[in-house]
Amino acid sequence: GMTGAVELAAVPGGRNNRAFVLSAGRDKAFLKAYFRHPDDPRDRLRSETALLAHAESLGIATVTRVLAKDVGAGLALFAFVEGRRLAPDEVGAEHVAAAANLYLALNSRPADLPNASEACFSLAQHTECVERRVGRLARAAEQGLMRTDAASFVTSGLVPAWNSLKADILAHVSGLPGGMEAALPRELRRVSPSDFGFHNALLMPEGGLVFLDFEYAGMDDPAKLVCDFFCQPEIPVGREHLPWFLERIAEASPGDADLRARALLLLPAYGIKWCCIMLNDFLPLGASRRDFAEGGAAEGRRDRQLALAKRSLVLYTK
Image 1 (cartoon, one colour):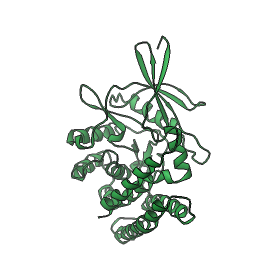
Image 2 (cartoon, one colour):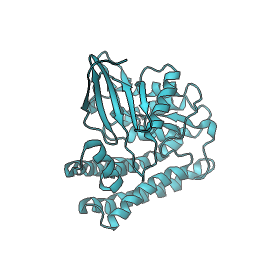
Image 3 (cartoon, rainbow, N blue to C red):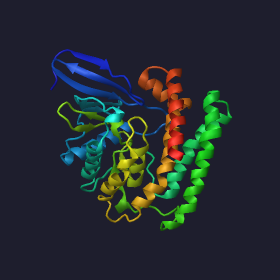
Image 4 (cartoon, one colour):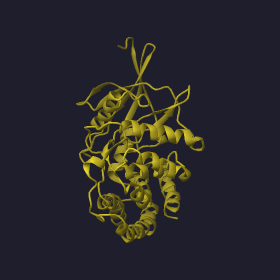
């Protein structure tokens, strides 16, 4: 339905994919080119468009809309959202409520979606997920594959912090039925936007938020969504909102008696996971993904990520 000469303008700031504003006459759309790599089998396009199709079937208006997709080319075209990102100091109770409302709406009826990226359905799987990320960084540090300052932080800061937290989880798991290996029943798994937070949202001129970027979405443990929501570092959510948010998320899981305890137990572990994510740029695959999205690696970007990981580790483990 768009007519006239087509123009593409690159949108800076993406970390995984390339993004463009597509203009034709007075119309605009948002074009995303998804990252693909032999060592990363995740189908980001499928996950995102499946979640948005589910949202559209429910009449949810606080997410973007898919206009077209080309699976072979790894491209998707979305409705253009006119808005701006929140500043970190702007995040308030009304924004946290908007996020909770979206989650509850997505789970207002059952969905036939694939599992989310790195979906975890037992405490063992949660800890193994973090263990894999820490292990990748530790091996790269030991093999001299990353900068000396980053390697030193991994071996002297990140690894000991994770080992301590892992021991703490094992010490406290006796209070939860089934221990580490008990799997969350299918009927208690929920639709998760994944990578959920205000770094993936726009504030519209008339007010209200529109949420974006669902390339990791799917079925998951709601405790993981809570942990990721409060650990993502780009536009942080104050911990004072945690009790209220956790209660709202629990409304979609009335039969999950252990959800609150599970989320609070795992929260520091997911802080470690996010420190690992911040250091992805020091790993070959992570650097390739950033280079694809941003058009080239930058030492300045790595400096910022390392500094952020150091600050975050102190916050997550105190």
